Image (cartoon, rainbow, N blue to C red; front, side, top):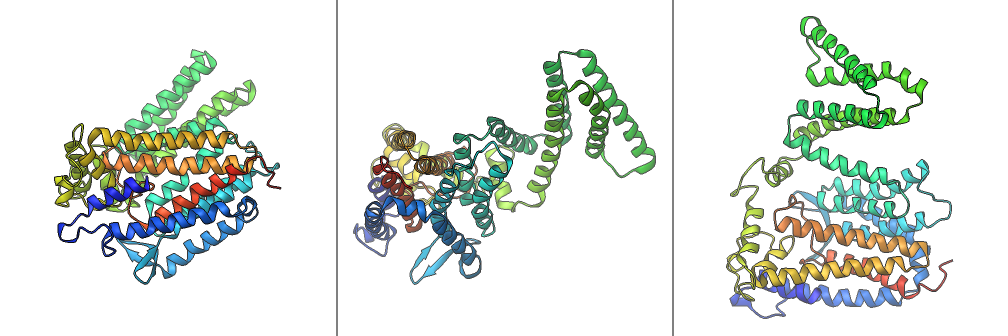
Length: 453
């Protein structure tokens, strides 16, 4: 992967006047140095005693958190984000190293026998380990790296977190996009109707559903006329929500007497969904930075801006598509040669693969990543130590989210949030971070028959 990445970085920044492969003033020359250093780092990681990573997991996590704090104060601002330390002619991005630090800390915490993910206190503590570096990365701001930390929640589900939480997460993602695409009032009404249907399916009592619907409509109409002729300050969405709360108070008597837990769960889902929809709507229109908002709108088809915010994605899609089945040939990509795609050696390196190597080359790259992910899952499952298994799934989660989002960006499937393709994209920090992340796990796997404690 590193070799293939280096070839494509060379193609992405190729200059006929400076075509030497070891020209260290060019990105491919610098990447060659990073690759040599990555090999040395990998050797150092695998010769270190495997128990070092277990006993010093919290120390490594603490050091990476300190780096994330310091970069907010002392870091160099590049492209509007204070995410890098400047060391002479080099820059180091601490968020890339905090990823394996967080995976180690999460593994150390969850591998303790006392830590059962069916208990609220344990769930909150595990989530905090993930959210602290995610929040510090958000402050830089670096939305791409922040999302990578959230991928570690997949580890929690593997280790026993309720699948209902996973389903809730998927519903939150779905509601996020529906809130942006649809009118809030219509979406709220649709969720209320869905809740009524769910109550009927869980109780099979149509009179109960009619009575509940009647109570809700009566309270809603009462509030509507009160606001229209007297208060004149609530608005449709607030009326709907207040009516839901008041209806819940009336309905609570039935839930208490009949002990119908399913009705209570559906009601909480309904109330939570309406609160979430309104918070997403407010955040999207008032909190998100304009360029992030535009990128999401472009991906969802709400807005088209091929010469502005959507330029990168538009040119990227043209580049990938122009490669056809077999590609235009190495160093023969016109989109690549004439620099139509910005950041092509970093976040959009897959464009070079698609244009010059075509569908076959793209399939080969995707196949390598899929094979790597399945191999890592296999290795994680054969671990005897809970620490090693949990860390292995942390590695899988981080690689998967990078692979999925980066290629999704290049093909216009997900918004542009700027994260590298592992071992392919230009950059020393990301290459070293991925190397340490992977080879710590390989070191743990090599000693899987030994006891860590």
